[in-house]
Image: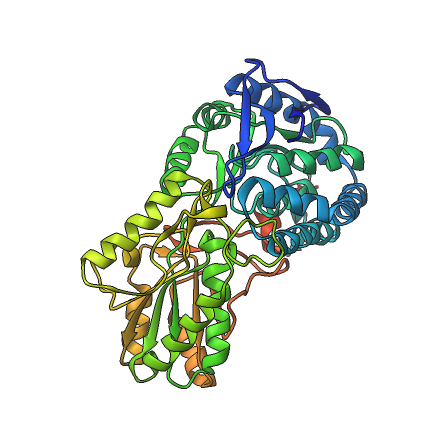
Length: 480
């Protein structure tokens, strides 16, 4: 167990005002892996004040200076990648191989935005008057309150704060209370990289009270949030009081379409990766699988064979592919989806049970599960499961596949498998989703925009598009 960890405000490590502590437990074993200071709105307000005080100097700093800080942070994160990965695996159960990939990807965000800091361009527009010039200037929005989830506890932090800092904003981060340890270690590296006091601040605390402080403070110009659609809607409504800018990466309900002309082995590989990575606890993971009827039987046979080979266990074991569910509430939801589908006529062809024997006794483990015969009205086809459960349905035509895929209030990610180039283009363009993987179960890259349609959110993260979320556009009319 690590020592008690503090919050980072104004360039200093501080206790919470209340003195309250938070225990962090490994969901695979139930053991306490660390403790952290646990604050409330008072801590959030002092972090906001620190960020607000630091903003004028940071926003006016040269882009090259901000770039150097971010590049140094990239070097430190990459240097400490194994240590960070072990923290991620210990506090949220992620298989260690995946945790290492997450941390390396997080470092890449700091590297990418170290370069993007120097690419914030303005423009001139031809004037209608001889004695005027139209200049378009882009400048940072101000203090950014970033709220991140537990399922990617380093990556989500990097994806939010890297472009904000590159743009010249200052940041107050509230990580998920289930996974604060990796965020704390990341902020230790931010401190080591030499960022000026107040530029980046870390508050761990009660979600409702910290969120309320973010919403009510006029010093916060923008809220960047990843989490549930329900909470995202509350933040969006609350931000209206001060007309704060928001970017929201919310729930997903990703469909995967497997057409009869697909490379079935490639599709099995891609579906397994998309569904069971991070134990299915991803907003972009396959949540609904639709297979063309003529190949449904052989495809499901190959898929089930692969799923049965997956080793389940403590993520710190390098052989484990599927780890635990994050907590008891998440476990109950996953088991509830399985039982609801079973009760309504679905067949459990693989898995379907909680694992409780031996090493599984103290953790939140569910067998990787495949369901067939699923239909509308089953929760697993209408809600985000966030667990290792894959429902399979069939379709007969391309139009039907598109209709089934789009029949959701969510529009974050979708996937399709086909060898027909024309179909790939038609279907990808028809799908109402912000991310579409064509023969690709892992489409996310640092330089590509990440975000959704419909109730899956607003704004984009990743690539040069993310910089727009943290910059205001100013029109300067210069006359003489």
